[in-house]
Amino acid sequence: MKKTFIARITAGLAAFAMIAAAGSCGNGGSAQTTTAAAGTPAASADDSLKKVMDAKQLVLGLDASFPPMGFTNEANEIVGFDIDVAQAVCDKMGITLVKQPIVWDNKEEDLNVGKIDCVWNGMSINESRQKAMNLSEPYMNNEMIFVVPGNSTVKTMDDLKGKTVGVQSGSSAEEILVAADLYKDITVTALEDNVTLLNQMELGFSDAVFLDSIVANYFITENSKDYVILPGNLEAEEYAIGFRKNDQALRDEVQKILGELKAEGKLAEISTKWFGRDVTTVK
Amino acid sequence: MTGEQLSTLFGLMLEYAVPTLKIFAFTLLYSIPLGMVVALLKMCRFKPISWLTNIYILIMRGTPLLLQLIVAQYSVPYIVRSDICPDFIKSLLENVDIRSESYTFNMMLFAFVLNYAAYFAEIFRGGLESIPKGQYEASRCLGFGKFQTFFRIILPQVIKRVVPASSNEIITLVKDTSLASAIPYMEIMYIAKKQVPLYASLMPLFMAGVFYFVFATVLTVLFSAVEKKLDYYR
Image (cartoon, rainbow over all chains, first blue to last red; front, side, top):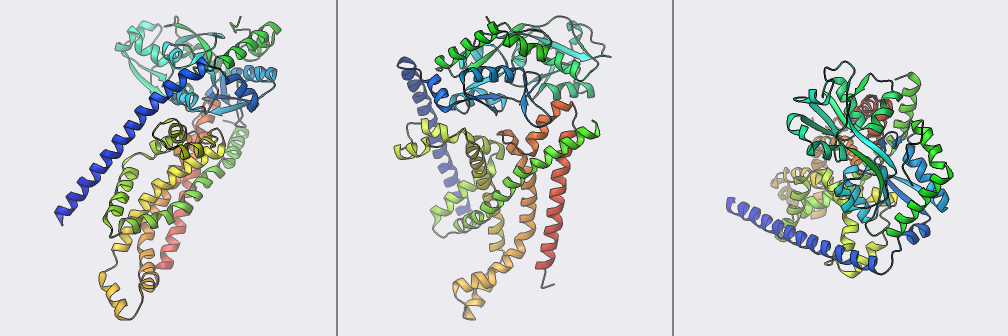
C-alpha cells in the first residue's frame, strides 16, 4: 500500500517536471518569435496608426488612482488632466477614447500583448521605460518630493535618517529612492497607491511619503490636509506617454497633435483647469 | 465623509455588487458539476486518468488563485505568439478580441471554475469514499442495478455528507471573488479600492467588507437550513 503511494507521488512529480520543462521550452520559443516578429514589421511598414484609425478608437491604459492626472470620481468615471488632453487628441483624430484600467505593475505587459495602445497616466521617464516602450516627448515637468505630517519633527531631508518612508510600488519614485544615497539609512514600505500611503502616514504607519509633487500638491489643497513638503528634491523628471516599441507612426501622430493643441492654447486651457496655470512643456 | 457622499458611495457599491454576484453564481454553476466529473475521474480504475487528474488537482490547489487569474488573462496572446502552438489553434485564437469585456470575464471565470472544481472534487471524493462497501454488496443482493445503486442509495447519502464541507468552500468563494479586482475586473472590491483616494478615507473598503459579511451571513443561514432539512434520520 505504502509502496504504491510513493510510486504515485514520484510519477506525479515526474509528469509535473515534464510539463514544466515543456512550458519553459515554449516560453523560450515565444520570446524568440517576438523578437523575430518585432524585427520584420518595423522594417517593412508601420501600420500602428492605420490600425487605430480603422478601429476608430484609442485604448488608453491607466491606473485610475493617480489624481489629478487620471483618477476615478464619485460616479466611477475616469477623469483627470491626462484624460482631458487625450480626449482633445482623440477629438482631433476623429476617434473615440477608450479608458482601460490596468494594474500599474503590468503596464508593459498589457502594452505588448495589445490590450492597450498607450500608457498615459502621469508616467515619469526613466531608463527601463525608455527600453520597454516608445516614449513621446516629455509633456510636463515633475519633481519627486518628501511629504511629512504638519507636526512632524522631520524638517529637512537629513532628518529622515532612521525613519520609515512610504512609496508607490512599481513607480519611478520607488526606483529613485532605491538608487538614492539616503536609501541605506531609511526603511521603505511600498504600497499600491499614493493616497493610501498618505493615509497610512497620517495614522503613523510611516514618517514620510516619497511621491510626485504634482500629486502631493493636488491632494493637499483638495483635501486641505496639514502636510508639509520638505525643501529640495531627489531628482527632477518629466512625464511622457508610452507606446508600443514599434508603433512609431501612432506616436508621431499623437505628438504632432499635442503640438497643435499647444499652439491653439487648448493645452493651456486644460492645464489651468487642473493646476491653475499652464504647466505643460510641449513644444 | 458627509451623509450625501456616503449615500452616493453606497449606491455605487450596490451597482457593482451585481458583477460580484455574477462571478459567484457562474463559478458555482460550472464548478460543481465539473467537480463531480473530476471526482469520478480521480476514482477511475484506469490509472493514467487518475494520475492526470491528480496532477491537475495538485496544480490548482498548489498555486495561488490570484496567479491563476493573471495567467488566464495573458494566456491567449502568449499562445498565439508561441511557435509550438499548432496552426489551427492559432487561427482560432487570433479571432479572440482580448480587449473586449467578455474576454476578461470569460478568462477570469475559466480560472475560477478550474480552481474551485479541484476543491469540490476532493470534497465529493471524500463523500463517495465514506460510504461503506457493504452497502454496494447489500444493494446488489437486493437486486439493484449499478445505476440504481448509485442514484437511489449512494448519492442521497453522499449529498448529506458533503453539504457542510461544500458550504465552507462556497462561503470562501464569496470572499475570493474580490481577487478579480487584481485583473482588473470592475466588481465591488475594485470600486472600493479606487474610491479610497477620492475621499481620502477607508470608508469604501469598510463598506465593501459589510457587503461581503452580509452575503456570507445569508449563505450561512441558508446552509444551516439545508443541513437541518437533510437531517431526516436523526
